Figure 1: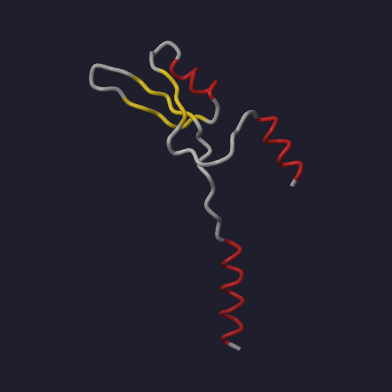
Figure 2: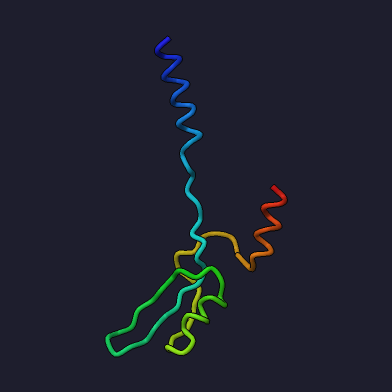
Length: 84
C-alpha cells in the first residue's frame, strides 16, 4: 500500500514540474561609454531593442544566449497557440 501511495505521489509530482524553456530574448542592446559600456539582452524583438537605444546611443545585435525559435510578432505567437 505504501509503495502505491509513493508511486502515485511521484507521478503527480512529475506532472507538476515545469520543463525548461528556451530563452525568448533574441536581441541585445550594446551601449558604449567612457567606462567601457554595457549590454542588455532582454528584448524579444529588434524593434524593442532599437527603441531602447534610441536617443542614448548604442546598437542592437543578436543575443549569444538565444537558443529558441525565431519570434517575429505577437500575431505569430497567437497563431501557434491556436494550432495547439
